[in-house]
Length: 130
Ligand SMILES: [Cu+2]
Image (tube, rainbow, N blue to C red; front, side, top):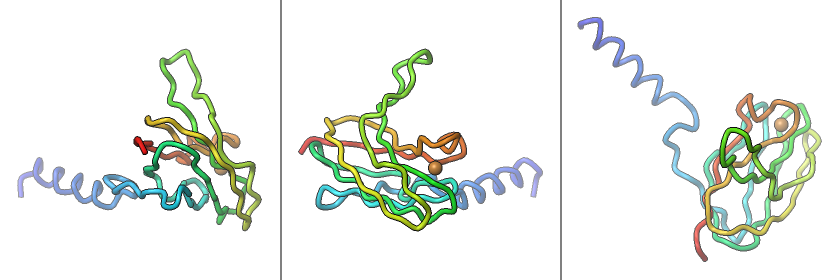
């Protein structure tokens, strides 16, 4: 096989193995988003919900403290993300909950503790009309 093709095959294989890539979003059922927190991931990473009150229940399966916050994406480089709601901090092996009122739009999910967001603790929340 020519070298260029070999590289292509490797890239496709990596793309298929990469977690979270191309995953279908998981709908929040009964107005509740259930998620698991771990070092350093939010599962599921892509979620959809209907506009209105969203209850968030997050279980911490990790060994560090984590939280699950809903953020409006930054409008430009100079403006930070704005947290609109979420859960308090969850100790390891505990479950925390919170609720947030959401209008249709695209939001980020993130753990706002230390640099967990940068390490991969983030996700996407798409809110649609009721
Ligand atoms: Cu965290």
